[in-house]
Each structure stands twice: as C-alpha cells, then as structure tokens.
Length: 161
Ligand code: ADP
Image 1 (cartoon, rainbow, N blue to C red):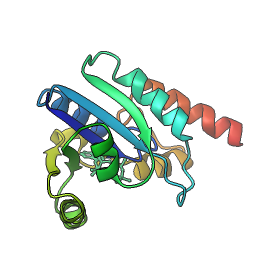
Image 2 (cartoon, protein in one colour):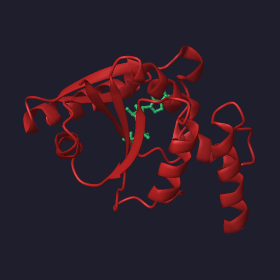
Image 3 (tube, rainbow, N blue to C red):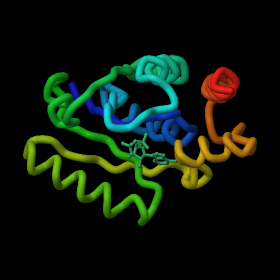
Image 4 (cartoon, rainbow, N blue to C red):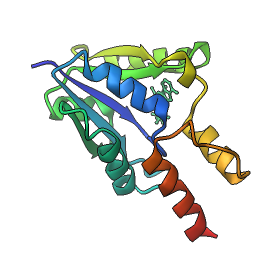
C-alpha cells in the first residue's frame, strides 16, 4: 500500500493546503495529513482544533486521515509505515527551504522520498500567515480558507477580544 504523509502546521488550513491534499490523495492509497504540535511556536489554534478542522474539510476524501505528531517528520513517517513526504511548493521562494528540508530528511532516512506538489495557480499566494495578518486588519479571507476555518477564525478573534 502506498502511504504518504503531508506534514505542516496548518495554523490555519487554507484552500491551498486543501488543494494539495486533494491532489496528493489521488496519487496514493492513503494520505495522512500530519499536524505538527510544535512547542516552540505559539499557534493561533491548538493542535486539537487544527486536527478537527482538517478532519471536517477532508471528510469527503475517504483515503485521507488526519493525525497530530511532534518531533521529526521522518520518525513520524516511519512510525506509520510511510516512506513518502508530500510538501507543497508555491514558487521559488519556497524552493530553497523545501529543498534543504528534503535533503535533510533524506540524510536522516535514505528510504524516505519527498514529493513536491504545486497547488492550482489561484491558490499560490495563500499562506496561513497572510490569512492571520489579513484577519487582524479585518481583511476579507473568504476565498482563502474553507468555510469551517473561516468561522473558527472569526470565533477565535471574538473570544480573544
Ligand atoms: P510549515 O510550517 O511546515 O511550513 P504550513 O502549514 O505552512 O507548514 O505548510 C505545509 C506545507 O504546505 C508546506 O509544504 C507549504 O509549502 C505548503 N503550502 C502552504 N500553503 C500552500 C499553498 N497556498 N499552495 C501550495 N502549497 C502550500
């Protein structure tokens, strides 16, 4: 069975992420979207909230599973018997970092391959940080994130005051 991991912070998940998930799910038997529980960054959404949001927006994709993880991506991939890491590329700005990460992961485990998938052009300028920045200035994020994420973002902003 061909199993891939798509790791990321997904804070929050955007339509760009969802496009990568949809495209990648067609390439493999099982795609595990892996939400990084990163203790060094303070996220807007808790890892549980991000997992729930991703589960909701991928519920129509039967071969997609959402999990959380901490530590190294290669260790997580190995723990679920996957040897493919999916990463999204938005353009040259992502490339040098992503290439470096891919080579680092290969040096950690030579059996694991990184596959780069690009989102449709309409999503290429979307990022979680731009969504959060727009939101803080009351900008329109409607087309950038799935409906459930949009609602969760407005709720979060309200409760934070
Ligand atoms: P990380 O903190 O690991 O970079 P992100 O959640 O920001 O996590 O991104 C996860 C992956 O999705 C990365 O490979 C990133 O390049 C990719 N990605 C994010 N937004 C887009 C987008 N709009 N189009 C294509 N790929 C994207």
